[in-house]
Structure formats: structure tokens, C-alpha cells
Length: 433
Image (tube, rainbow, N blue to C red; front, side, top):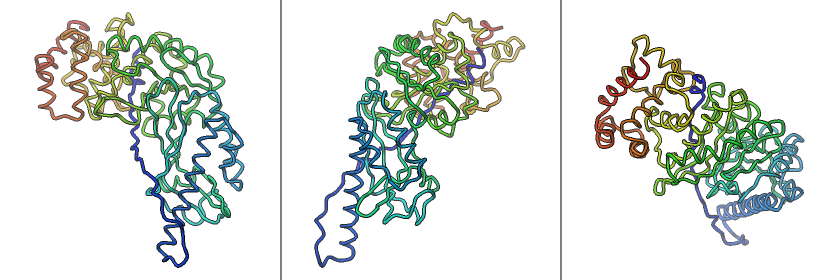
């Protein structure tokens, strides 16, 4: 089970949401200044592209393929038109509560006179565009993703000309599962599993564990989270990387928990997904898959109470605590690297640092084992409820000063970091020595 720890990585994809109201202007009239004429032209362009995006949204909602493809540039290359048709077709079985686009005319880029793959047009425009969508039965509010759309005017009509031409300017289009193939959806009482044809066996395995994972996490964490989850099963490295982000090394993980934003006032996270890596999870035993799914589900449940920068020994160790809870695995078996070190007389001299958990770190397995046993030790000292309360307080601090961490530990555990280290070392010696 040791190598499973190196694959248990939590991630947060944060997208800034900017809502902009379109301001109506007076209609053009003769004798206006050059500035007024430019403003009127810009207003007309905004209205036309806003209407284009509305028609595109409505086409998805009403499953109108012709209307959707009518928004695509008729002079675009065949590959782009085929990809757009594929996106529409692949969404057919995805249960959506909403699908809409928002225009940010203040986020305009200059695409240049001849962007790659786009034929000469009367006019090109590259405003900021965001996709808002919600999965039915999972999302309590829409999640938001950036779309790198370039629009072209041909005569009086505007079209979507490309979703890749702006990549050289740093604006990329977010890709969902529907960009990579037909989507198959398995619904459960606690959410859904989205996969592609050919991955049916794994999808059924995950769906069979999903409700139990949500129940197991809720038993520890409590009911103060949505208790619904979407699990995505990509089929290859390219899709996995698109879903989780380029900052993660696909070879080093089995699962990633993602969210796009957190409301700090309500401790609510939005756009949460669990992505399972096909390179790793297909070979997992039933017990290992159960641990991975419960680990990632814990990150989903706790995300609303977790501030970026909180210590990884707490975040990953707590997720492992829930993941391995009720697994029946003894500590020496579940933490073999740590057990071997302790038996050889080598005890940790510090709590695991954040850098130890990065994919590619030489001792990542050991770091996860250490973090898990810290949390097991804490649960034995303050009880499971006390461990959860410690998580809420300490993870809520984010990147805190050592003195603040010590204060929380004294109030919650009755000791500071030095005392925690000493107590944990004693526990390891008794348990693994």
C-alpha cells in the first residue's frame, strides 16, 4: 500500500469570477465624433457577440445541434468545426442544471492581424469569455472556467472562429471531459461518475464505492458539506492534464480533488471535482481504490474550511486518516517505509514539511506515512471529534506563523509543536519499534 500514498495529492484550481454588466449606449447618429463612432461600433460588437453566446447557450440547453454549429465560423478549418460538433454531441448524456457564457469586454486581447488557423475576416475580437456550468444534483451553484475564444466578423455576422488562437497570448480554453470524447454518466445517490466508452469497468467500480465514500467521510467530518460529488475518469494523460492542470505531474498521482473557489463567509466550496488518474487507478485493488476515493472525498468535504497554505502534514494526514479508517490495516503494514526507519532506530526529527509532499520529492511516500501517523496519534490523544476541530481551526489559518500554530495546538491538544513532535515520536516507538 506504500506507493498509494505518493498518489494521494489534493489540488485547488482557483478561478477569479468577474461579473460585468453590459452598458447600453445611445444609438449611432450622424455627425458624431470619431470617439463616439468607435464607442457605437464597440457597443454593436458587444451586443452581437453577447447574442451569439446566448444562442450558443440556448442550443446546449435545448439540444439544438444546428443552432450550436451555426455559431461556429463557416470558414474555420475542418478540424475546429469537427471539434465543436464533438463537444455538442459529447454533452448529450451529461446532466446539466445550467450552461451559459459571460462576456468580459474589459479583458480584450489583441490577436494580431493573422492569428494561426484563422482566415482573414472583416474584423477579429478577443474579449474575455467565461463558461458557467452546473452539474445537476452535484453543483449548488455554477462553476466557472475561462474560454480562450476568438470571434470573427464576416460581413454583418459574428462567429466563433477559434478556441486555440489566443494560446500564444497566454489565454487558453478550459477543456472538460466532453472535449475528449462521448461522456457516459453513472448516477448514484451521492453524485455521479463521468467516463468515456471503453472505461466501463472502472466507472462501475468507482460508482460502486461512491456512496460509501461519502457516508464514511460524513461520519467523521459531519454533514456540513454538500455530500454530493462528481468523479471524472479521463482516459489518457492529455485529458488528465487538461482536467487537473499542468502544475501536476500525472505520473505521481492517483487522484486529485479540485475546486474553483471558496466562499469564506459560508465556508462553501464551488466547482468541486475528483479526477482519478487512469495511469494509476486501473491497477488498484478494491481496498486501495476505497482508500484513494475516501481520501479525495475528504478533501472535497473539508475544502470549505481549508485556507490555502495550511500545513500539508495536517491536510494530507487528515485525508489519509479518513481514507484508512476502518480499512483493517495495521499501522506497520500501511506505513512500511516509516516502520522500517523506526525499527532501524531512525525517528523523525520534525513534522513533515510542505515540500516533502510535492510530486517528485524523494521521500514523498515517507511524508504521507508520517503525516498519517501524526493524525492517528492526535486522534488517539484528543479523540476523533477533537481531531476534526483541530483541523477546522488549524486549516482555517492558512499559512500561519509558528506562534499561531502553537497557540491552536495548545488550546486544542494541550501542547505546542515541540510537544506534538515528542509525543508523536514516542507513539511511533511504541507502535512501530
